[in-house]
Image (tube, rainbow, N blue to C red; front, side):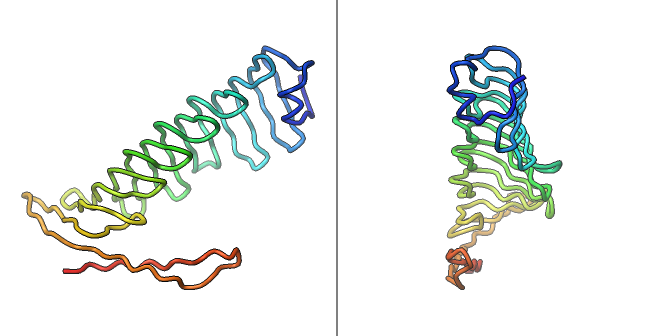
Length: 198
């Protein structure tokens, strides 16, 4: 059993050029139980001091390959990692009951994916970029959906509603962004107004 070592000591110590099963307790309060190869983590469970838990594979001491990151009982991610970040296909369950399944890049929704809103039982399905929905379908109900472009996850510019029997209604949305104030972290607060122009 290896205990009370810093991450740097585990990675670089010649004496810990270890291959096999081990339990490690780090000085920052994190813990790891799993398999080492030549002193580096390869597969197992990593317990963070903030109560999050990662179970899966590692490469170069970072999350890599298929794994599951649990932040709480109701919030977790299961899917692919690369260089410690979400990348590839993955499923994210959020604390409020929403979920996203699709492509990721650099820890953000990126590519094709579907997002479910638990409070309204609606879906977004289409293209995502840097965590934002930019193009695709807004499935409002079994009989109604909106298809078009989006900005900050809301309809923007030309699009149309599709009703039963393929009845279509063209619409144009314009979002008005205004700077309302500066918060305590000196970040601009953006107020989003969403209006349809007939």
